[in-house]
Image (tube, rainbow, N blue to C red; front, side, top):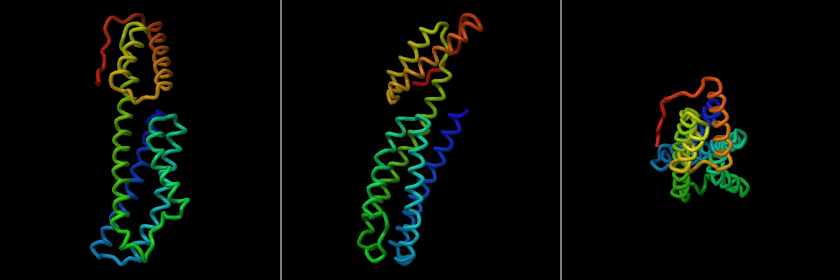
Length: 195
């Protein structure tokens, strides 16, 4: 339940960061097609930049605290870029130079958008894998379960950090031991194959 709540919170944070990037792109497109003046466009974009940085920082912190190391490492380059831009004080759009910088600003936001969409796909895929790994307890002995989990780890979910996978496999093996002690040795259990 806690993993589901942390995933939902990170999902909504990621969607919020995506929304701020899309809002900035819409403001730049409105400026490009001369629907708004440069002052209004720059002020709208500048109001959305710092919340984007804060939301992404909160997302990285959430991944770090909940122990999703791979997602944290995937988020880290974007966080580094945001910190670097903020430290250089080049995160705000200049009203007088916005027309000259328009293609560059659009390109930056499009790269950010692509990066975040890939991160969203990883997030959805990652939750699906972690959910299925918890259901994989399907063999009659602990050793067979451990071997099966190790096979799944090497065949498709190689993105998992080895320390986290070892801990996950050990906790699943302990769960299988307790299940066998409680229910005896079941003859057939349904196995869920997802690769």
